[in-house]
Length: 285
Image 1 (cartoon, one colour):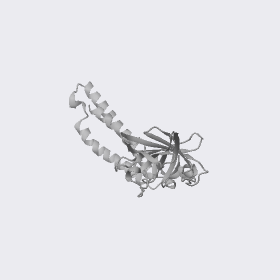
Image 2 (spheres, helix red, strand yellow):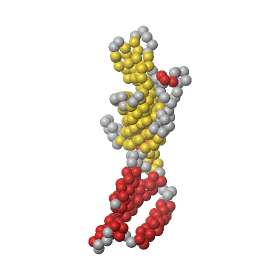
Image 3 (tube, one colour):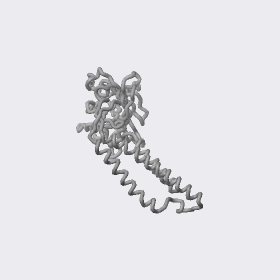
Image 4 (tube, helix red, strand yellow):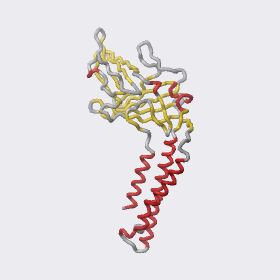
């Protein structure tokens, strides 16, 4: 029973230590494997549209995105006809019949911080995109639409040295952003931009605190494994001598000494980090 509990604790700690970088309310800054990532050059409200012929009408889906903050609220529009407050990715569908004004038929908040807690961003580095260029993958969640409440947006940022700044076409839609797919739950975008080219974003300063945490988490896992082995071997030895129940456990004095041993070990580890805490380096994805 005791060994099983320790094994469960070890597995839980390992799961936390190895989890991807997740943060609420994505604001263009994130960490990937202990390295900072800055996409603030892509800040602002941007749009891309997809037009379909749906006789006798034309259906236009306009996808609006702001990576660094919630989309701007338009005071001139009815609240029900625009993206809710806190949305970072939102689609607005309109249907137009020749000779008549377009009518908004759908407003789909796919990602954002809609209720103050659900918006999250998860980002990781992708070494190569389909064209062989470096890329970064971002997943934004928090969208809710009707009965669907687990919506998400996947964005593949692909290095394109030709797009050195955010530019828009004659209609005001951003150049380099395209819709790959939409299945009424998941929106998949590709954003070609120089913001993720290696010479601009992949060479960044690495935080010494994250490096220290990486070392500490593996030390903690190793300590737990050692404790599991210690209790297991001791219990087996006592069992071979005929012990049962609580007598299988190590002696009470040995258990009492464990906190003091752990304290001395922590002091040694802490003194080791204190001598190296000011070292910063550079890391390339």
